[in-house]
Image (cartoon, rainbow, N blue to C red):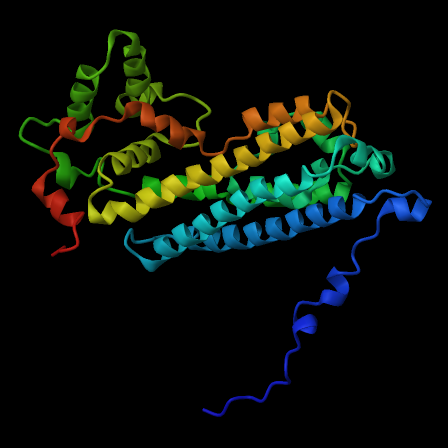
Length: 345
């Protein structure tokens, strides 16, 4: 096959450096005010937006995988999804560490140009809100909803709403977990006494609880034993919660290793988002104290409220309350062990 001749690619043209390097226009310069650190402030935030764009790109690829009606647990798609999500975790780590560069700007350095920014605010980062929406955070769950709407243009509000209307990773992962047959499949758990896995597991779990932990058993029953009592408002369904806990318990079996890595990496994404928010809180407290933000928010107080409430995969994290040590786990039926191994018939 003959290769098409392409014109040579030049470094600066390929990266469009003429656009990128001319995209810094400090407001202080327009006003004839000397504010040497405004250039740093702009470049840091432009860099954040580039990383947010990359995160959206990675999450979009993962979302395409989970939009498929069926995904085999040992498929390359699952490996690719874990790989993409781990990249997001690494990017979030860079975002947290990048805050250290911004912290070289002292409070007095910031005051040189702070008032020139009003009412612009990092709160207006639409890409960050789209990241949250793509992961699974909806408008009704957002901290300070009235303030949220007041600070965005109608066009940007619509962009975020469109992101929220698409199936989020939380919704798609829930559907993926619901399709797994291992925790409740009749072909595995119909034994002579009619006792299914969750009845077996409840016996072992209740035996391992201390007196102070007995309240956990009531919660366990509402999630795993009595479907009629399933707590309202949970993002994960009863079937998805069962599959998720089962994967956590038996993750050492080959077929469950990648699903476990996927769930664990989603928790790492949540943690990375939280670490970034909390690092931002400390930066704001250090830089402006108790003053309001440039966008009119309550500053660090608002950020703290968002950081405490914007966890997306918290229900996966809470399942660790119901784990048991390996030596207490119910023994899996041999046909299930075979199906979870590499040497499947």
